[in-house]
Length: 436
Image 1 (cartoon, rainbow, N blue to C red):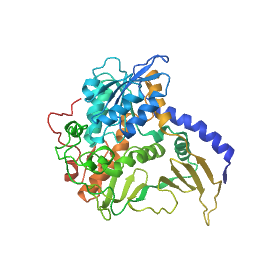
Image 2: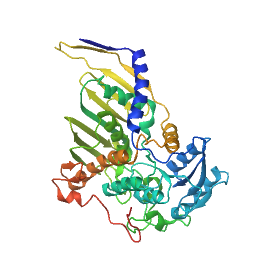
Image 3: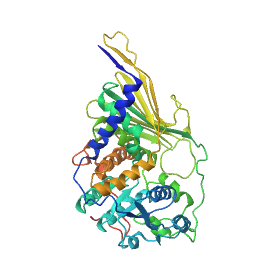
Image 4: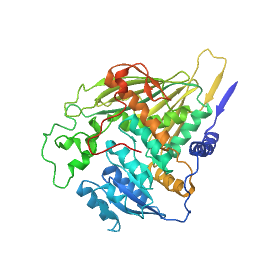
């Protein structure tokens, strides 16, 4: 038997199947349909780096407008307000913003530890929600977010924008079609070198006057202000994030789940530590993790900050190893490498392929508006976003306990390490409560 894929048929079929994939992923109950000509007014909670980018993308759509901006850091708020030509209202407390009656939707780009509360409160206020990844700090938060979207019947799109990018959709459909054969192993990675200084070791100090530090902390424990805990670098402190594993892992596991047609691992075993970077981060600078998935598939994740070398020349990406070929994909595009079998009666003739990547943010946020107008479930709704966030969070359960953990998908609990289940939730600082 000879199986041959030409570049022309590959690109033609890939594009068509990408549309099929989107339709498949978007299947679900309809949600409050708005007219296609209705203008959607959006409030933005968190308008720093990522939030400012999201706001500018939304602002570029003719059927959308920015009605409010909210941030606890005054320079970010002023910059966002200026970008709206002063047409939006500004807030330092998102709860006040949610009282604004003309807002149809909310875009959330706060630090991770704020995602659950702002999303749930937005749903309670009757707003549709775009929430950046990772959706939650803990698995219990994620489940509560799923419950809120269902209870209040809201469109909720998770900011896993890789799933909306055409070249990622093509790559997913190629794998689902079986073009590179049965997948037995998937590798993902982020490599870089910031050793040894990293982000440095600034001392604790008084917070700047333009920052509401108590509100920034919110449900997290009260601690002295440190410049590295705030703005971008919050990702490297356990009270606010899950480190690089959740920061990039949601992107990777979202693609892996879609390609493999599954959404939860059977087990996870993650090791690592802070081996070479001397800054005041709490999360590891080096990680090696293995997740076992149903059907005999291993998924690995490698992360290091002390050496940027990559055997394939890519500092980040996902590699799907099939019996007939290998597909490597990242934001730059994807490529297929044929597998040359020795001693096999079956000849596989697959041309090496390369497809360039395209912008990932704009189609994803456009998709959010379309879902509000049509009532179709998003390509990465809150349930899929929760599962894509849970997989790396399960890895962190293994890392924190130093043991391989076995996962019960239905009960969302570890079955073999009791200590790990105590990490499924976190106590909130008063007066904040996780209630749906």
